[in-house]
Amino acid sequence: MREEEIVEKVKERFGDQVIEAKILRDRRVSIKTAPEAYKDVVKYVAYDLGLRFLGCVTGIDAGESFEVVAHIGFSTSVLVRTSLPKSRPEIDSITDILPAASLYEREIHDLIGITFKGHPSLKRFILPEEWPEGLYPLRKDYSPKHPEPLRGGRSR
Image (cartoon, rainbow, N blue to C red; front, side, top):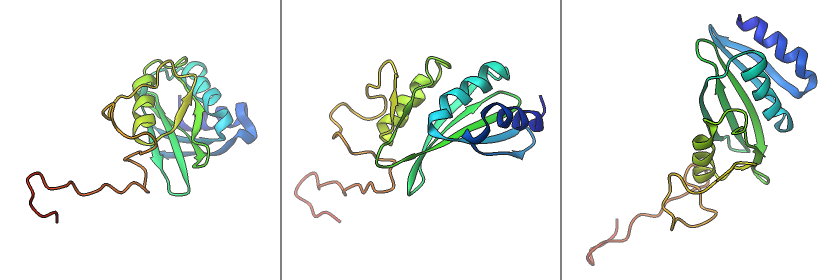
């Protein structure tokens, strides 16, 4: 399926729920959608358009908001994107549609703090169990402390 067809079909199916749909380059399409339509768009792209391969899911601290991006497809990749307010970083999980999303969603939850509603197990994946709750190392406001000296030396 050509990139133009993908854009046209997604716009036709989801209308105003599609904020932006564009061709980034050959074999790369970006669809930005409202958070409440994210899961439905992922399902449509994966099943109705037949692009069932999930390359990855990424989470981004975009400054004023968070962004979640599902990279779907193999020879042609469709990026299904949505923005979430920092005050309420949660979205429906897509693990029931694409089970490979499980580890990606756990990683995003661990490192950025986005909650994926309906995920079967959002237990720690990257960070150690004793990592403080509410502290997310990939957020822009995260500021790591310099380690304390080990043997009475001076810290830098």
